[in-house]
Image (tube, rainbow, N blue to C red; front, side, top):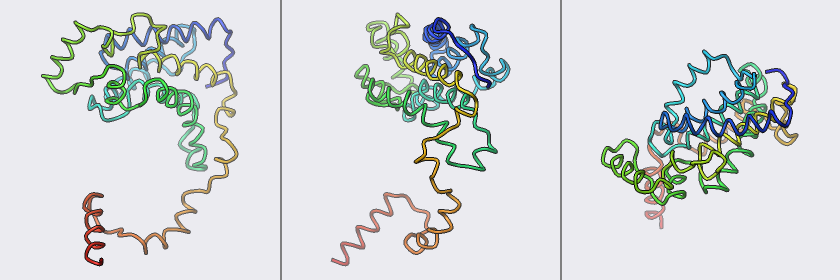
Length: 253
């Protein structure tokens, strides 16, 4: 995307609309990832800024359903709101496959804004970015989305304690004590900053990361050493491997 000049009024509208639209969409789908994704995209489109063509947005939206609820509603993966915001940030950074293949160190350009502005803030606010711990830290409960019995109890708590519901607790989109609202706000803020840079400027990385050795070169140097140290042909779990090592140690002693 080309550089975009934004007034302070536009920036504030985009950020506030992203929070409001994301909360509305999250409640509509009862899903954090597509809600956050749609809210941010819509907020920029309302200001005449198209982050991506609408047909591309529609296609990605379908995939976002697989990221909600800690990845396919399993709860064990990253919060879908975090995933959606970081996805859009990396998309705006705009690294191509060719650029990353030619210089793997550039990958940090797509990662650092999300780490600094999304992941770190979620860790500060909620103490986690994975769905189960985040929900428990917020509300002192974290039901399994795919368990019918747990779903029933979740609905009961929603009726009794709206303040502890993941999608209903933030009645005001300015409240940040809500993953979708916080991700939308931070994501929109970060994208505003990125859009006001030249495209190539978005892809710069700190000197210490830019000097990172290429993984292919590293492999050539250390692979022979590591092959002598490890067991490359063994297909066992970490638990079994640990038991094997402990058993060997006990026998030797």
